[in-house]
Image 1 (spheres, each protein chain N blue to C red):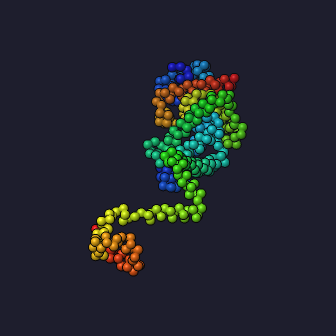
Image 2: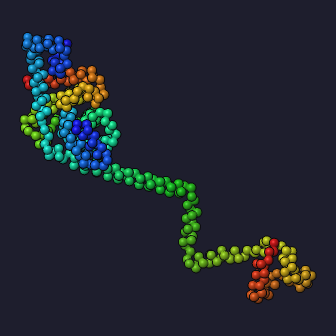
Image 3: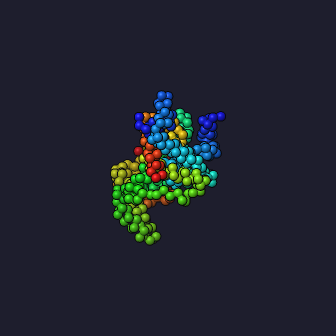
Length: 198
Length: 184
């Protein structure tokens, strides 16, 4: 065992009883060992002296308040950061939707219709709407859905006029309608409503 | 009531919402945390930073503490690992910034340590400690200044007692030699 190791083990109380006795004997006889041992003792003494250093009470008292202060700041920083992330995510989502919409929608067409509508004045808008409604009025329900024979059958049944009379006097459905006054038209209308024709 | 029961009561109180109990725990351990960090890092600002970091970890993680070891050992574990990481980062920063060796400047913090004589002795020892490699310094500080047993140091550092003794032996020898050089 080297000298240093022996001394350290002696100081640390790690030598066996025999080793300890042997070391103490050598200490009495060997000047070199005594010198070395003394150096270690000096080091131990310095360690003990430096351990006596005490922190100022002012500094110790400042530790908890500083921790509290830092901790609350970092907590609010975390909250702000999370809010920032959420806001950023929302913005990215909105931008993504806008970009995707612009990719998949024909913006030119939409813009042209919108620009055309905005370019019209009030009178032109009304005229346009009337024209659109007029197109609907021209739609002839009877002409498109019923043949002449069906109308003739309807006239003969409802007005009890035979085909011969209709042909002889050349009575048309339109003529009959034009001859009716409002009361008669109302009466016929009500009868038609109450009668299941088809 | 022993220390562990006190700690247990304080932790229980703190976890049930009593912030004052945490303050009491801090007051009980902050000085020991500071001195360990200070002896490991050799600088007041760095040690102060470690104290604040350890308190934040304590505050956030006390609910995971299960009393398998003493609170003191648990706090030491945090302080020790934080200090070593701090040293690693500091060395890395120094390497990347190509800065020269920083001298230990304690002039601004003279009032932190009370008593002129004790302060001088502390500075002398701090200088010697900083000459040791980090791992050896850690063992040396724990053994000589924090008065921990090898078994406790082993729990904190995760190293075998044989390795710890070998490190301690080298550290002790180096410091003794350095002290001899400084004296001459």
